[in-house]
Image (cartoon, rainbow, N blue to C red; front, side):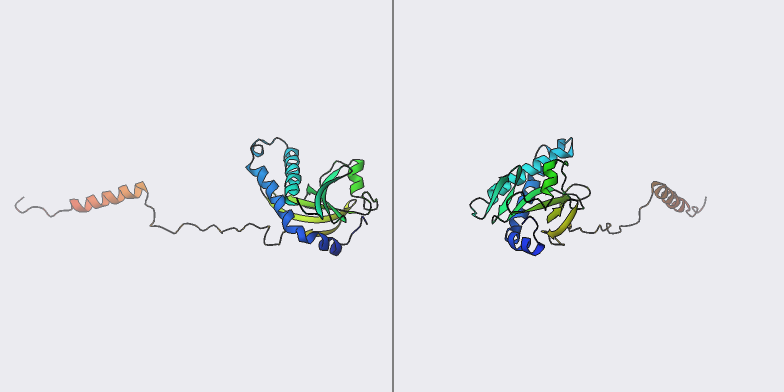
Length: 203
């Protein structure tokens, strides 16, 4: 069953949504806190590093769970759930397309007419960066068929993928600033008043 409905996929994968959120967050933290990020010369370095950490954290997270494990099916690494769904974790675009070189294998993975794994549905868990590429703004579970996305399940709630921004408040108004020229002028005026003394008697 390479094709799977959104509802059926959600019923199978939803118990592990929190685990997938943890895996993605941990992999991203590894990247941000590591020494390579500040020296990145090409974005593929980041994508490869995070992919490695996604697999590593998934192995630890799902260790000991009989119905969920990290597996390599043919040439693809991912998370196999209940022997029904295979989830491949990838970086995604804002349009929720994973980035792949259009090899025959990549094209086959997204062609749901082809039954690659003996009836196991193929899904993708995509992390999407914000425009500045400083944080993850979206984690989505999708099924893609060729060049279209069949359905989407967002793992982050709408409020979770937005930063809590405190609006900028200007500092409270202080006493008006007096320029140096104003101070000098004021000083001269004060001195001129002091000079207007009454003449001494008998002078």
